[in-house]
Image 1 (tube, rainbow, N blue to C red):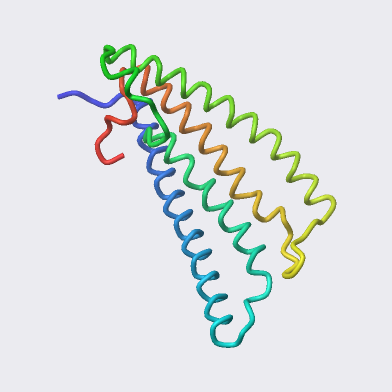
Image 2: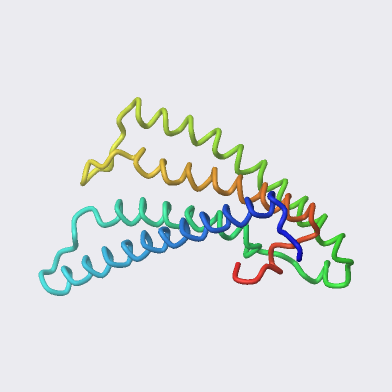
Length: 173
């Protein structure tokens, strides 16, 4: 009987979190679709759209898309070029996967750091949307959570590579 090492159990836990976070992102995207359908119905029925539909779609789509990124990272569902790695040994592919994850980790941390300052500015200057007066910083909070989860997912990929695991190979990812 083999037991799963604790670092891989933590990776599984992070995978579960990112999966549910992505599902919540899907709810955001469905909300964007619903707002668009509602606005189109208003145009058809009454000749005028739902006021502020553009600003709601802009925030909802951005938040929803960022919420998909952590799951894409941890499951290896991002863009890859298998043509270069198809004939390589598994250890070499795992090493390249770790290198890619390290770059993703660095980018996620950089974006998290810089966007945090953007969040502070939006809170300080109280910038809002034009029609609904929604504070713009509301959209930054789930985006920053998403970036933190991308960093955790990328670190998880590095841990997996240490054990010779490639994210794309995991069942039910």
